[in-house]
Image 1 (cartoon, rainbow, N blue to C red):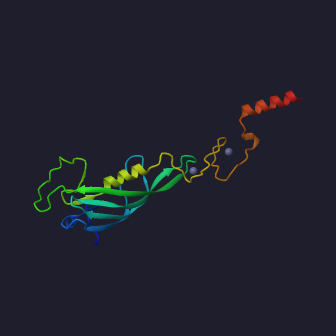
Image 2 (cartoon, rainbow, N blue to C red; image 1 turned 180 degrees about the vertical axis):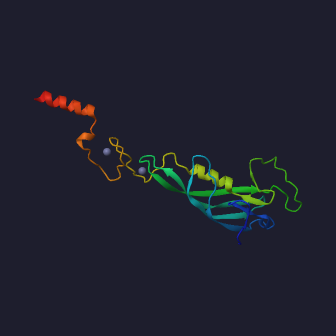
Length: 186
Ligand SMILES: [Zn+2]
Ligand SMILES: [Zn+2]
């Protein structure tokens, strides 16, 4: 196994050499400190890193591996900014776009939805990785599983446990009611 040849994009590798190998041959490529655009309303809090195995099959190349990164999110309970670690499992099959020997385009009509290598025999994982990152975003992110959130009275974070409110924090309408009750008692 040798390192893959870097391609045009941050997550692209030239696999012409691997395509020339027999089925079963593979390469392992290292992903280090990669940043990609992950779409609107989503931001990475850490670069993408991990390893991808590129396996020559009798049809094309299957890319498998695990990548890790972190999403810049906000805790849905206490509204604190957090970096949420995510693990991405990648498994994507790529078929050639061109015949390696002749350079002629291969017919793609029979499998229009499958991922294709580029015309330069590059395997570009950016789109599946972006989609995996978008799918990894939780609906309600939490800074920690038992985040107590915000105090309903004063809006402060409850992370330090219960806190008292001085009397002058109390809603003036309640204060008036309390005064009325006291007067009635006397
Ligand atoms: Zn929180
Ligand atoms: Zn409070």
